[in-house]
Image (tube, rainbow, N blue to C red; front, side, top):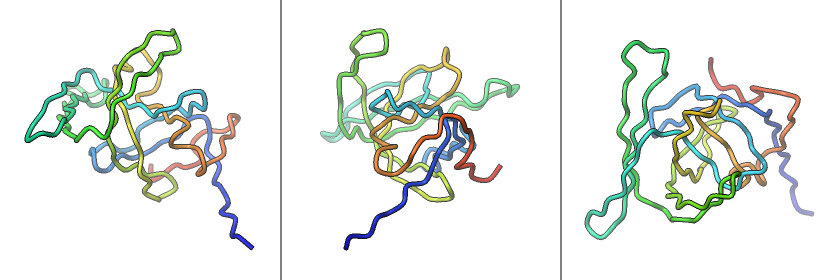
Length: 148
């Protein structure tokens, strides 16, 4: 008989850490309609070094800070994919690999970046990350709260 691993339940909004990026207590919207997970970044550039492609992201700290810090993050590009937005517009997304912390547990996550400044939450967790790990209770929030 196979062991059945019970899935943990997350709410529609969670507070997560991205320790490899130095980002903590970030609000993430859970979106079962989105395939990929996305992190807000105002600006990014793609460059090549020693035959490998990289993405360099510029992420500004919390907007309520007097002098918000700008993080410069560089990651190797894991893959590229063309994604259609909810408005039907196609764009190339660059995917990189990092770690995310929920329920005091680190998970691997594939992230793309885009400007989410007009959105309510700086991060979106999509099906590729949620599937097989979590159930979503849309009536709840902050079930995986780390340390706040």
